[in-house]
Image (cartoon, rainbow, N blue to C red):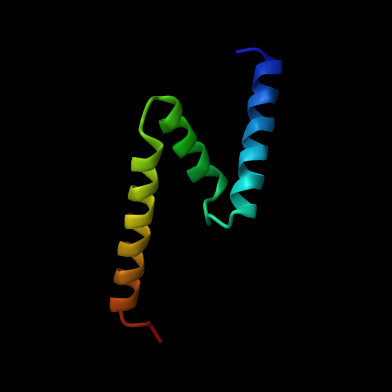
Length: 70
């Protein structure tokens, strides 16, 4: 991959991250990069969205069930 392609990829990721922040997705750059990579590899984006939502629900439930440390 040449320098120009890398620069374009970085610019595209910056744009996607900006859109992600505007939409208040709560995704960090690394998570977004992983999800984009999975989509580029042919994974169904709707399935990925459902998985992310489910993982967030489970994490919230675990956090709610865990007593707070004092």
